[in-house]
Length: 188
Length: 188
Image (cartoon, rainbow over all chains, first blue to last red; front, top):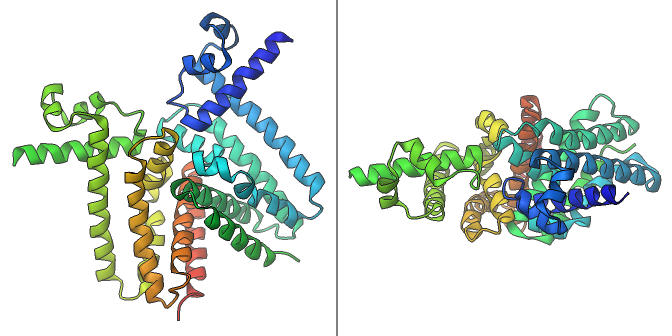
């Protein structure tokens, strides 16, 4: 149990450090330091930074699945659920302005590094894409569902990059309002 | 003259390496190696990677100004000029799918590094923002011009992140078509 708790602490610290400072910029020693572990103890849990990244992605996938289930429980309509996704950029606006989107910035960095884990990180986008697509199918736009899901994902990424570059909350709010109007045109 | 040419070669090589592999990932030695210079000769031109980044941003600003002037010369209407910007994601789709947007990915990375040059890199976005705003003023949407400019910038960034993550050209084309339709609603 103690070993599991330590492993979870390492993954949580690595997740935060990768998000805040970037994957390449974060060293093995940074992560060990953040959880106050000796190099030997740390090494017992993870042998490489890649292995930690793999665990971070798995943890994010699990967290995302829980969040999507919660949205489904809380929002009765598919449009309401899509809006929960759209509003992430407002809900997480402080972090987004400081560090961008955790998914988008990770895939962007791994693509440049031609990193073997890029496909793995892409599963995070695919999870959102699949879920958004399901909501558009429920809205009776089955034929366009995947295209509409990609449009919503592109919205969130565009807003995140610009909010990070300009630190402009009013911009985020305007773009969310614009998406809400756009979504209304797809509601029955 | 030889010194100027060498300096320009260094800046061009660094620009490409920063874009393809990321700023942090690119070393002084990588850049010197790409232009085939000894460390001593290289050091004569640039004392630090930050100084190279500064020169890369200056070169990109100059290139962007030239490109904007060309668009103004080639496209007679403000809407046509805005479409030239929108279509960058198609024109540069190969690079964008491999490396994302050169401006967006640089500011994203520098923000995470809390890099002193972040404000300098932000001038690239501001140059596009100011130019797009001017086009919307010419379209007689002066009051909303800056908001519309930010919306167009967010479009390009969202498409770039998703195209980079999914390598999907049909997606890029669809989003450009969507923007063209959106822009028509603002034409007189």
